[in-house]
Image (tube, protein in one colour):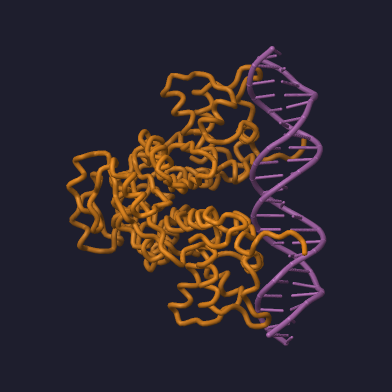
Length: 224
Length: 224
DNA sequence: TATTGTGAACCTGTTCACAGCA
DNA sequence: TGCTGTGAACAGGTTCACAATA
């Protein structure tokens, strides 16, 4: 027998991992429409990718389809949810309850997709009176006790850029190993901690780049 | 002379385009700190990439550095801003003024990075009384006239998923060619229209996937 | 027969290592 | 001498096209 990693540690390409949640969403949509079976072509269309890519992606998880028939929607949905790890809930803390923090706290998509916001923290005492989305806004000083109490592994940073690094440091120090960063700044964290960033203005700038090119008709240099 | 596309149409790899705004932000930070010159190593550190990648990326724009010395911060900053197209302001409309729409309307990062929110639209008449970030929330029916009046090319969708496709259709019909979509759904648009999506729960799911793996110590299958 | 699962070809992006130059 | 700019090697991701098979 050759040396092999256990089934659960098959390594799935990062690009595929990033699409699994899209497939999961598409499958949930199909299930809600009453579809019980779908071909790779149909699922790919719902997810906005081509069918070859979808099949290749699913092949990294295993052989969950039936040749000549397609995929069972509920079965595949469960398999992908299990692979991602959202068959049970992940407790999450949100730090920084400004406009964006409010929006995140109220976002129903977290709850419905395997995440549970267990606490909202803000460094500004003026905000501690507030109740947002049914949760008290608490002091940032409570971070350690909340993380320990709820075994929080994932933290969301929605503070201004200047505060983000120190918030990340505190999160890492008390055991958080995955961070979703909305502050427009680069975070440095030790190995073993994952950071994903969402930068709203970067997305707009990427659109602006392409928009600018559209205006330029090849051969004509000046437009009024 | 060989056939060549004009300077302004040099094609820059998509991966590079996505990083230019990060470099721009890093340069703005360096300029604020009073730094006038920086090496690829320093700038790369500020931007959170390695220096080889940074130099390769910048080489697609042209030769803006000085061998043996480095880059002039202000000069490079201007060149990147020009390349992205954010030396002048882009008018933007936001549709869907719920929690997220509020946060986006109030986000100062747009204004400071070359974007100007010219209108907030919502289909719900109950919201039309509101003033958010100094702007009246207006009827979605005003979309066409606003887009025409301000020559809007970029639209932001922050509606619930069910409404997103019809909003996108209306946007495309009245001439918008770039869309930033926050609704958790796949949009279909004609060729020539760019869509970028930001899906908050997908980002968390990607973190959950990696988090789940961390818990599994190779060789031990059960953890308490 | 219809559709999956997958090697192989292809393409894009990253890293290396050093030539070129101030 | 020190740092940029860049070919060349490498790695990762996508698409093709078809063998396997329910």
